[in-house]
Image 1 (cartoon, rainbow, N blue to C red):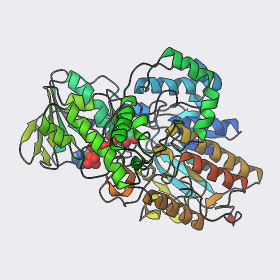
Image 2: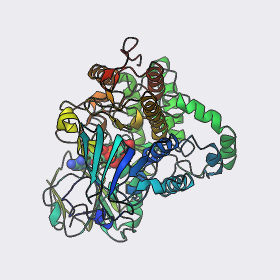
Image 3: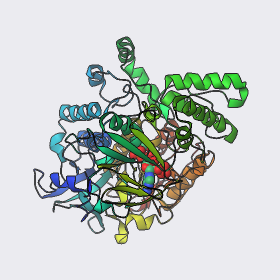
Image 4: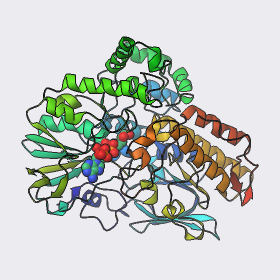
Length: 578
Ligand code: NA7
């Protein structure tokens, strides 16, 4: 039986991704053709919703296309039990709706998937955006028509549209990665991917569940599976440094204070590195005594979430010794929490620095291993050999299962783009333009792909920040650039090779000042076999990035060519980030 759920561009793979069949492409209301558009936006998550709104308000004829049956993006698909955002509720929303932000209830510290989905649905309805989207429309080809200087977009169901500009709002973590284990199709039970979870409740009572993957999704789903299932076997390839979320209801007094100051908080959010204005650490681990270091880690752990991620030491991800202080602290917590020393040992990360794989934020993840119905299989010592009709066979045993849950991550940042089938000038396919890894200007533009803009694309800070904050910056900047081109009567906007090389080099240079490159993470493309090993997002900070983009806009967009003529040369040496 195939994995239930599905959406990624696996045409012809419907047996594996069969829930997508529930949204027949082409069944969407509206015409089968759109010929007179200024812009097409692909995706209806935070990015697509805001981009369509901005362009519409700027007077462009714009159409949003979305594979799913409604708005939500990430939050439409990732419906697994326990799914919630790692950013706190107060920050995880649009900042451009000052009246609505007063109205919208803030109840839990971290918004759950149903709450975020409802938020996006409500925003889309309030802004009257649903009519501007065509849902159930899976884009399978995007081609630059050189003579017309327009993009032609086609969907699996035969819809075709052309537009001057194409903006991808497809998400950085949306192309699900489900490894092809031998024999998966022979499994007699049910298989689910967290990234494509069914809309209907999945009955798990009394079932023997196997969970593959212990990244953020696996960390969130495990406690919920364990509460319901008869037994859960966790198949772990790499242990993680899981941080406690310290989730719970928000104090109404805090919410009232927050709402009274929302405008100022939003203003500060725009000029913080991570899009969340919390005071960062100002001390090196080595300015403190051992006792003080421990106390600082304890306090950050007690506060949980981002306060531990960003709240220990200023050198936690740049200095090996400082990093070891944090890593040892988390390992000591694992020992404290887990009853069985052998399980605790298997759960302790030892092969990469703390923070260099995306740190999962969990609720009762480690505690769940103290339950009688949860077992851990260490795949490093006991690898998966095959999936059989009865379960998962590892080197040492066959684990009998009724259900397999894949929480195996995403082809991050590039996967959703390359799966669109984009072809630029001369028919060049996007993956062919990126043989050694993605090359972009500001994470937003690619040479030889004129009039294409990639919200939270590779080289953007999006995914290492509070994502809506980065999305708003990208959307507003793209909208202003399109207005600029319209005002000067330009037909094409294209990133220059030299500016692209400079930005791409800068993205790697900034990452190389940290310990990130030493881990096999999705940041490095290391989770996808054969993917070039480069650091994918921009880690220099959203504040630095925003200033850089503002400077470029103010200077008339150097680094771009308009109608083939270069805009002024880049001013100043380098990009001034660090
Ligand atoms: P992640 O963080 O990429 O986690 C995927 C997990 O699946 C991770 O534990 C992987 O182990 C594991 N995995 C992947 N492929 C395999 C194979 N072939 N065999 C066994 N285990 C495998 O994805 P998530 O969905 O949890 O989170 C993604 C992001 O979404 C998250 O970082 C947040 O930003 C939100 P590995 O560590 O690669 O050895």
